[in-house]
Image (cartoon, rainbow, N blue to C red; front, side):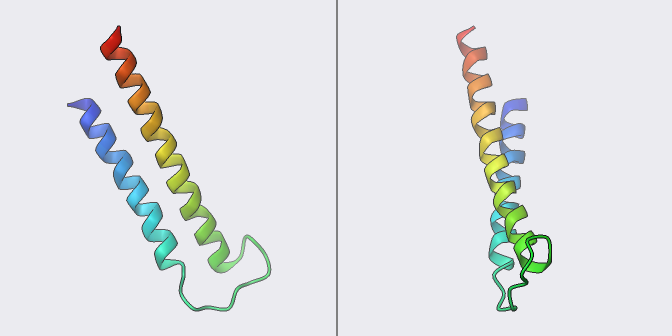
Length: 69
């Protein structure tokens, strides 16, 4: 049950990152710096998706090791 809950939380994090990326594509003028405006939001969304996928892979590996142990 804990494994299912953890996987569900990670999937929610990935969906949140995708939503940040999609919502961040509004037709605003692009600022020149990375830490200003929409570029930061898009970068954080991409980072959230990547970290969520990494967490999902780590969780799957830990679960597989526990089953084989």
